[in-house]
Length: 418
Figure 1 (cartoon, rainbow, N blue to C red):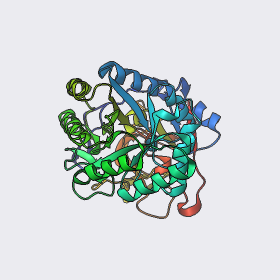
Figure 2 (figure 1 turned 135 degrees about the vertical axis):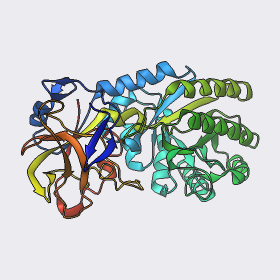
Figure 3 (figure 1 turned 30 degrees about the horizontal axis):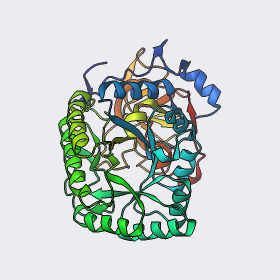
Figure 4 (figure 1 turned 180 degrees about the vertical axis):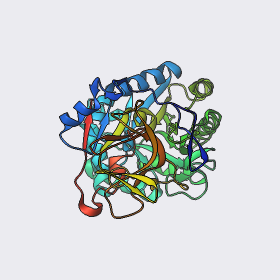
């Protein structure tokens, strides 16, 4: 594919090459099945499809690159589809959940409860009680949440397993979304943690460690390595005030994937080198402590596609619009309405005409009565006709469950793991 395309005499950078899926007879293949046949198997469009082989390769490649002492956890909020979570439960070392609903899904997998952790600033009393009863690790995010957790523990006659989510004074640089540093709804400000640790000791809860998450969607290996080093340093400082030795340190994830033109894939080698140094520091200062990486998007985003069908091809003032049966109500992120400051295109293609035939610059829009329902804004792609299949790549994370599915009452798309 060309490095540059021209639209209205303006040069636009192309997306990074996409080679995670096979292509046969100019048609995308997913899990060894052609896109057309998969659509027939699903029975309707739109739908999401996630490739299990790609997820397994991503986990295997990650383990091969990272030091052996690093434990990989899956952040289920990235994609909570039960079949995906079941598949990943056999590949990773733990699962991190952020609601009672996600907790129920995780507990249905083979993952032992002691390898499940529960984060989130707004846990209800019922959710805390369920977590204590299940025996999962609860990441407390405030003093009030700690007191409610202790009350649930007392009522159930069970000792809650607890870690403290820390809001560090630093943030992950060059990140798509900052999750630490300054005023945050997440975690306990670092300066307040020693007092909270003392209270954990007074309450007699089972303290395990810390959870730090400084940011997400970073493609900068140096920035990630810096944040990880600062996280380990801060955790060891705070551990001096802990009621028991440090056993678990979750330093978050933040590994990004390339979505937009100009993005380059994250290089793991510098991250791995930094983690090796942090493991050595941790082993000396807190022998036996478990270092966890919490990854969601990085494990599943590139394994998934969103597929919708062209309902109509129309031209307005010389601009081609492909009107489809899918849109922002199913895939808010691809429309640019999920955290983008300036709208940029996800990789989009005509899945049954990937490389061959005439090409054109077109916009892909959905069926909703809003100009925000835009999946591709003047992108180069194969000339499409009614019935062709539009594919949005990099759609395995923050897709269906991060979208306003009830908007305008259109039916839900299917999800399949192939």
